[in-house]
Length: 165
Image 1 (tube, one colour):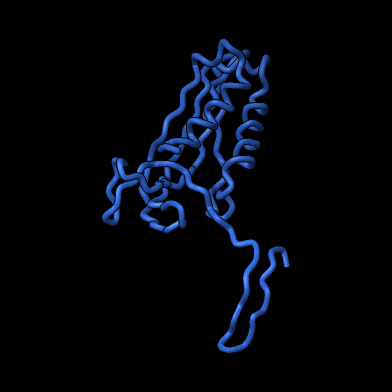
Image 2: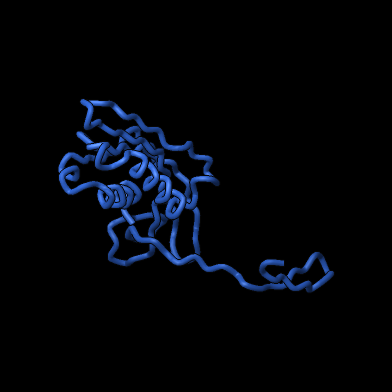
């Protein structure tokens, strides 16, 4: 996973619904980025920071009589709900969009989405990133979740911990 992963993946989803002639007039970029330092040990890797940025997607000369702009907006909404699983927890705002008519057959469509992506690293002796006296490389890592356990409170217990209980 690299910086702008969400931008790249959502761009691909949008391009997939566009008529071929519109793909050359599609552009996407990030702006207003901040690097939020949130170091957290994930066991098999580290979430070093969150990359917060405004992603802008623009389709110029969208032939809205051929492709309803609502289909592009629905694609964005569906992708966000399927893939950006932290949106609700992080209380990110809903996307903004603007349709600017050019003539009676086409319009420019601009969509803005605020993203907050984790910057994930895994230990790698040859990795380019030095952090905490070790070397890392950028990569997602597996998060291990306990499925069962036992709880002790002072000298009382153990009480079994069971998932979905």
